[in-house]
Image 1 (cartoon, rainbow, N blue to C red):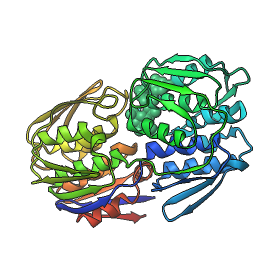
Image 2 (image 1 turned 135 degrees about the vertical axis):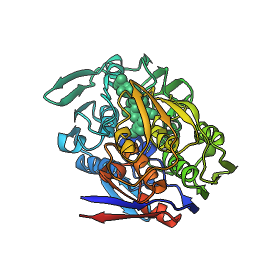
Image 3 (image 1 turned 90 degrees about the horizontal axis):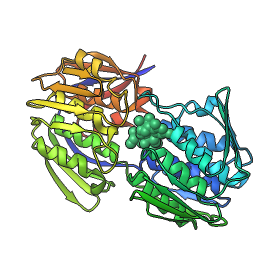
Image 4 (image 1 turned 180 degrees about the vertical axis):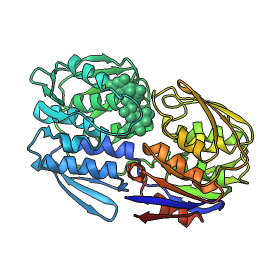
Length: 418
Ligand code: UD1
């Protein structure tokens, strides 16, 4: 089992190229099933989640080649509509396969998805949307069986603007003759990216980025080439790390407008943030001021995927911060570990009250989920003494060589194997 060994107290200075967003890549990879021609995807983020998704595609029969940070996918040979539990259990995004499989084969059998431990994460909104499209669904012995012989376009109103459900339903409707509308759709940039990708293959989708998406079905998609957007959550994590440690870091390859909510928050901590095209520069003296009150929300609000990292920052701010987690019900698993390091955090239901302390102290801590593990790494970077972070398999789901990037900025961090 690997762990990270961190000695805190170093400023971060330098440049980081941000790879493509995992949350763009995952639905885009899944949607390749809708096509029979070759697709090339650039700026491949070699995370555990994207690797697992490629494994799922290969298990269905796709041929995938990785060369020089790009993937070449040949979906012509896909001949299976069934995903076994050993594979689906590794990544929640296996649920994304349902829509494309229904589009291509009119049937699908997918084991219940796995993924991060951040709450119940039901899939009822995905399934009720499929049912509205006329799909017969049976849930038996850990598998979801879908029969779409009577699938038809429909007008769908999502009970909540779920990112995954919006993407699933877009993918299921691309090849349906007629017009499907999704109301109360999620508006995240990754959904706009999925629309751009599918339209580049010949789909006819409009409205992504707003609450109303219209999909005019087309007969077929052709192959193509695409570069998904940069990972705003990885970029946000480095921005927060710089605010905490102090220093001067330039992030390249991410759209600043995707990070407006976090830029607004970091402004309050007295960081200097400079924006130029696809570059964000963060300068900090390492003495952040309090964030006041922060609440996670759907886009364009503050992303829940940066809540844990912002909590690590709040722990060392001058003053108190109130954090309200509105998106997932169980996303404070990092708190007991931060407390081990000397943080002062009190939780009641979905609200955490964080009182900034002068120092965090190095300690052995364990990450329980992806972003929570990142928050422990950030805390370790500012703590006095040595911190060991276990559970880094969670970190590897959504960061590529995180420790190498932090090292290149001057952080004292290394991966050690037991
Ligand atoms: C996506 C992101 C994840 C991010 C989340 C919220 C991907 C691969 N993952 O996850 O990193 O944290 O958006 O921004 O893009 N819900 C239901 N029923 C459903 C679906 C969702 O009740 O059928 C609930 C969830 O439990 C959660 C909320 O809706 O409380 C938001 O979930 P959703 O937007 O679907 O997140 P994901 O697509 O799973």
